[in-house]
Amino acid sequence: MLDAIVVGGGPAGLQATLTLGRMHRDVLLLDSGAYRNATVEHMQNLITHDGRDPAELRELARKDIAAYDTAEIREATVDEVRRTGDTFEVLVGDEVLAARRIILATGVRDTLPDIPGIAEAWGREIAHCPYCHGHEFAGERVAILGTERAEHLGALLGNIASELIVLERDTVREVERTGFGLRIMLDDETIGVGGMFIGTEVTQSAPFAEQLGVTRYESGFVEVDPMGRTNVPGVYAAGDLAHIAALPGPMPSVATAIAAGAIAGSVCNMELAQT
Image 1: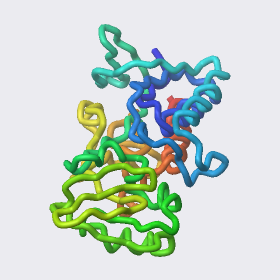
Image 2: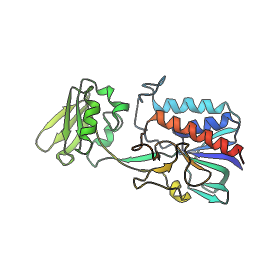
Image 3: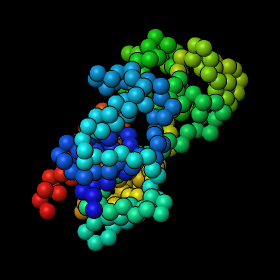
Image 4: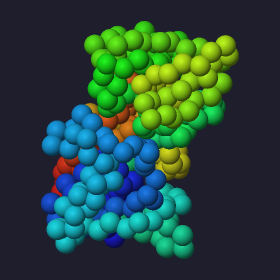
């Protein structure tokens, strides 16, 4: 019987595991190897790691965790998470793992607009967060796809881009990466831009919150309190998959995921100490 199983090996899961390992808790991190920022070559807006490859950050975090004897990381895809009385079972293939607590850090999945070329440029010349990718287009002509977020994104990018162009989704036929940015083929013309911002449809990456009966908002995000606790005792959630009601909406970033992982790990440890 483990103290805790952390499902998800991104920044939130890694930090939660490190926090529990430092408190000498028997903790197992299960990492499927699927990451929301898998196509990103350089992450930004994280002190001491600004511009670092996300894969390198994960590798450094794994080395940190390896220093603690009670913490283990396993590359494995979880099939099911279920509650059994006051404890939990995690199914990985034919193996059943038991734990007193569960931390969900599986993140979310982005469904991109169905326009040829967008997937190939996603995380590079095409992004959705100006805080993570805006500066990289400084002084460039930047496109915003769709009118829904045009006003919001335009205000954030006003000090960065040399020119902003709002494009209707149904006018864009194809997007192509070039040596200088993007070539965007429209109905009646072709334009060149340094980069483009888009909105995505966001869904949970894994079904485990639903399997455990965890409350979710209409948006699909897991509801947590400021301490990372869900409505199910013993289940915590951290990172992009979760949302605190006091905030106007999810605020995904590597920095906030790390912070949420630290909080969830600390609260998990405190509640284990009280039992």
